[in-house]
Image 1 (tube, rainbow, N blue to C red):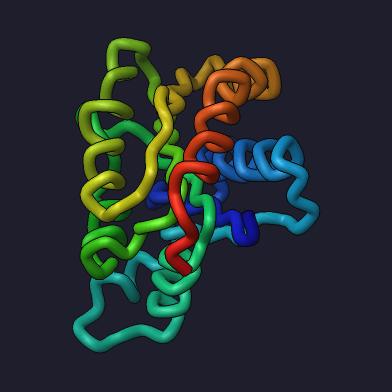
Image 2 (image 1 turned 90 degrees about the horizontal axis):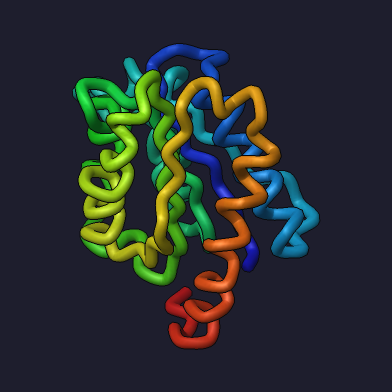
Length: 175
């Protein structure tokens, strides 16, 4: 794997979602033997540009980073039982199959565990539609899980990492 990107769809800068996504991407990178820090795309900083009529160089760079990543952690808080409109607006700008050859790991932060299925029911299908390989399960983090994030991530990675190895062997590189 070469590039790891953490894509954060929280409209608030400095959010818990941002912290969780960065830690997830860094930890996964270390477990996969990746030495570089992941690239970070914080959509809270790009929101006004993302919705502007004229193209934005910063948005175009972010789209290229995501489309060129080998692995992208796609994180959002849970709003109304799904991901944010900000994340959707960004992902809608990607070309069809932009994530072909990319592993995408969905991560939702929620206040109530009753929203846990939103990762699999809403975010995962969007990433698959864009061509990504999305191992299961996605990561549903209740806000209280953020206090013990390293432990939660360890359990999740133990289930996901074997799928990443299998995907790398089964899928020829498309980039």
